[in-house]
Amino acid sequence: MIPNTASSARQWVEEVARLTRPDRVHWCDGSREEYDALVAGLVRDGGLIPINDGQFEDCYLHRSDPSDVARVENLTFICTADREDAGPNNNWMAPDEAHRLLDGLFQDCMRGRVMYVIPYCMGPINSPYARCGIEVTDSAYVAVNMYLMTRMGAKALERIEREGTFVKGMHSIGELDPERRYIMHFPEELSIRSYGSGYGGNALLGKKCHALRIASWQARQEGWLAEHMLIVEIENPAGEKQYVAAAFPSACGKTNLAMLIPPEQFPGWQVRTVGDDIAWLHLDDDGVMRAINPEAGYFGVVPGTNRDTNNNAFEMLQRDAIFTNVGLSSEKEPWWEGRKFGVPVLNWKGEPIRSGEKAAHPNSRFTVSAQCNPSYSPMAEHAAGVPISALIFGGRRARLAPLVMEARDWRHGVLMGAAMASESTAASSDSDNGLRRDPMAMKPFCGYNFADYWKHWLSFGGRSDRLPGIYHVNWFRQDEAGKYLWPGFGENLRVLQWILDRCKGRADARETPVGNLPRRKDLNLQGLDIAPEALEGLLDVDTEGWREEMRKIAEYLAQYGDRVPAELAAERARVAAALG
Ligand code: OXD
Ligand code: MN
Image: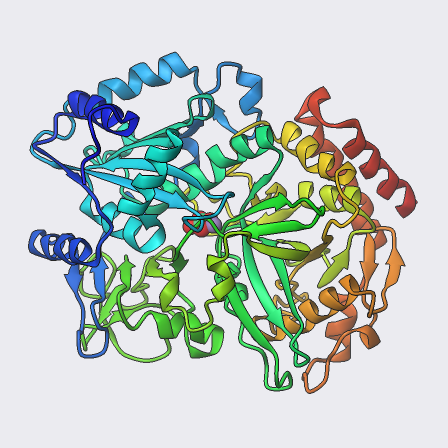
């Protein structure tokens, strides 16, 4: 499948091979036979461990280097000519310096290794909204994960050759040395260089590096949005389908929401997944916001997954899945905290479990093709994407943020997104367990200055009068004793129902300075066992707490200096004034 000599893809790959000196170059064609052969090779080398094939057909375990288990935000850089374009939200390095550093690391780094060339397409192959890239890597583990996560191989290469443009991604696991690890992005060159890590978010370059950091930059230039959002299809018993896209920081239940199972009291409702992590949003000619999921698979957090929390994920992990950093049970089955059955005997490092120790790494993951999801929406393959009724922002906040609130208009919604904050999680190794501002859940992923990003978001306000409603949710509110007030999981459909009814003008709300909130009577609580005090807490607006929050938001925005759009500052001031 090697393209002809004149092809820009081939020329670039030859250039990379001259620098990295692999023993062999393998152009991936994306076939199942190729996947099986790569897996067999990995099994031979110990990169994948077969697990109980009786129960888990064609499933494997990968144990990563123990120092390489999460994204590394402190080693992730945006390399733009002007430092201000990367903004205070990113680490920055001058492109020349970054190239020099990375050229040094990549030089000869693939000697004795195979270089896999992975042409991929982010989005349905025939979608005008899709974008392509080529990842070269010396990791067969990356190649098999890319097979599950993206549309890769011959078809993608065809499109690349036709369009003549693609994102250039160079990856090497190097020596897996944390001191020689960099994830570098060059948005102005549409290129990525990642060295020294094999972890998904750092190494599967189609995902965070391309579909968010580079794509967010392209999206700004081209007038669309690349967002850290799931996309879900909700069909009510009348057969009416609506779509929402929702942004949550990593490990806040996005995959669960994307695969929600309606509670018993919702007969006739169906929820289907379009995407679980990334949405590319475009306005169509009628001003309707349409979303595609650029990915074709999931790289989900495993701990906590069971039949009750996410039966769809649980089901799809039974075949053709790759587990990374879970434990093993006495039956040689993958084991993780919250699996609810089986006896763990080995931890994620492959050592016998010591008492009190966790078997799976908290950021252990599964990789699986979206085709294995029993609730996969056929609309995920639709070239024109799906029309979005509501955009939802959410964080993990023990206090203050109510269960749900609605922005009064687009501008207020942008403020809600920009002010998002969350208690930190295990998906990034830089967690400090504090509260961190994570605007639009894009803190680790926006490929340019947040101030310019908010301006770009605000610009949509003037482009259409059919924009989606914007909402903020919080499933993680706790009482003083630390007990969750809301049951979450499938019951979140009750909140989604209110949101969707609001979008159709069918539900009531009370206006408050921070947004429109449902009253108890506005939510469908039929059959839900929830204490009145819990509900009161969930729907309460703590005026003093919000005044303080608005002051903190002002401090946060001030970090971005005069680049902060005046419209956003004015919106914050409006809400603060309304709070008195
Ligand atoms: C992810 C993340 O892996 O956000 O999706 O970290
Ligand atoms: Mn994510």
